[in-house]
Amino acid sequence: MKRQSRNVYELYFTLLYCFHQNRAGLSLLGYCYYHSQMFEPACSVYERLSSNYPEIHDYKVFYAQSLYNHGSYEDAMKVVTDLLGCELDEESKTKVTSPLYELYTI
Image (cartoon, rainbow, N blue to C red; front, side, top):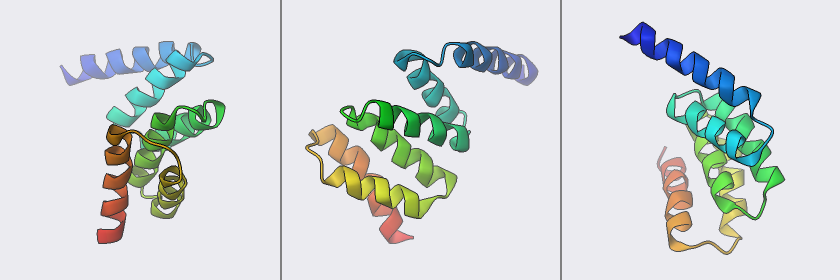
């Protein structure tokens, strides 16, 4: 079963990579990388999304979370502090402050 799941993931990532030029495909690719615990490529995808679509704060939140999980704590802190200067809704504030809290308690 594990081999079959791995083959499905490989096919899925290949298809997503082919369609990564549009926002939806790139967002889904970042999501898949993140939830497969492939944080380095997730960082690259979310960095690109956050620079291409700066008005969508969730991409910066996901970028900060990816950086944090990758072990790039200082870079994650920079993204989080940048986000704290933005107008955020309550859900986004919660997403932003949880990695910030974890960074201060390490």
